[in-house]
Length: 166
Image (cartoon, rainbow, N blue to C red; front, side, top):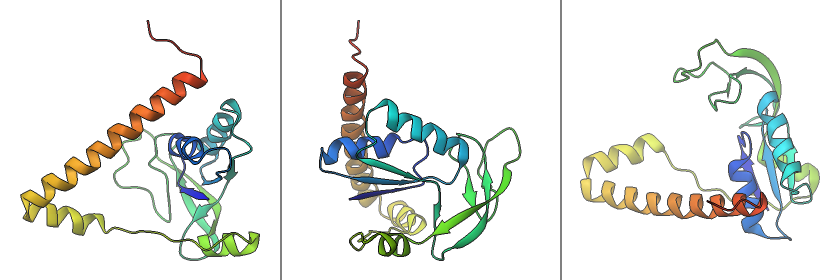
């Protein structure tokens, strides 16, 4: 069981569903209404409704309704306050969304406990800046993983669309 938090339009969630195989399941959390609509459409078009469940809620540390600042499909929406890094040409739309915790969501549905890995990005970045050998090694490993996953996803999408390069 995979959880895609902040699933956006589903690129990672659809790839997770394919990688997990026919028995795999993905729960895709996306509180931004336009992105959740596109996500649901992508799930339908890729015939993955039996593997991917779209949940129109945010995930946080406390279950409650919270303000959400939606920016469309750009990926800069967020709970609590507008994203200061958003290059969106218009101000985000403030809406209220339900927020759940992964534990509360899983407990309510009898889903196995969640095991997660969390990295402090700022701390890791500082360590990589301070130690160029570590920084290069991290960059190399991450880049290899991203390249492999993007190539596999590209081939899968081409296969699903019966696309043959010319």
